[in-house]
Length: 425
Image (cartoon, rainbow, N blue to C red; front, top):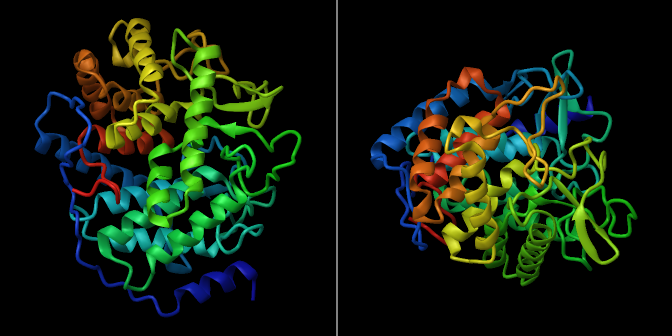
């Protein structure tokens, strides 16, 4: 039997999912431990808007594997712009989908079924470098059969693994780990594998994936700033009782603040990738990994205002406040307070980046994460309200997978519905 089909068929046996009790149903209306601001919108109205956007997201991006009906994936290439053209799933999307399912449980009666089906897809496509267990990065559809993408799709990408592991910790709190899938056991396995294979043991920086060896001259000390997920690391440290996660957390803040101080003191923007050169972290050179924008605030770094500000909101850690404060002041001046004028990418000095045709445009993937960072100070209230109104009214059909997904995840934080094992409702 084909290897992929065998893996999938073996995962189907014995899984008749029964929805468990939902411990923290949406909307949760979390009381954040830090004094932050919220949009000037009633909580029930915000929840209703998120529910509508979530329903639209499900209809657009959730797909069931036709020959394995309890396996699902997040279809991320609906606009056909990703390579290769027949790409259908990435570990990043699986992690995002699992996060949305666990947070929307209670509103969505099928949330656990969706969560489990998305995770079983991850189990069907493990990284062949770390099969026990990290997630294979990319899958394609070849004549109706889902397979690993042949040029590197069978190794891991750190961002996807981090979100999948964190979602499993959430699922353990949401539904418990006594059903068909022991969420906590898998989370512990993944946290250990991430430390062993995706963190540089000497530098304590987060690497790009399990395909990078620590002594790799080009990538061994490189890091993607959007893979710095400080609140994930804080929860991983508590769940695993492994103090190395605190070291990874501290190093991430150190790198981010070094880049902010030396390269973006007037904007607060962070680059997509950074390299260690002569003992200092610098923005990555052009075409370091993905393209000419690797050293700019582009399609990876657009997630950093969400990732980093979320840690302040949930933990009170103030190490990013100088950078986030500058970022908020700069973007409001840059856009004159118009949420529609957040550009889809900037050089670290604030110069707008055009698209391939030389045009400037906005994208929800850049706009909505700014709303999370705006929560840190009451001076941003008008700006936060503008961001909420603009992003929630933006038609889903006019945006793509990445934009619509980051919008939902960011709005969960902004509306007070983002909880963690350390901050249960």
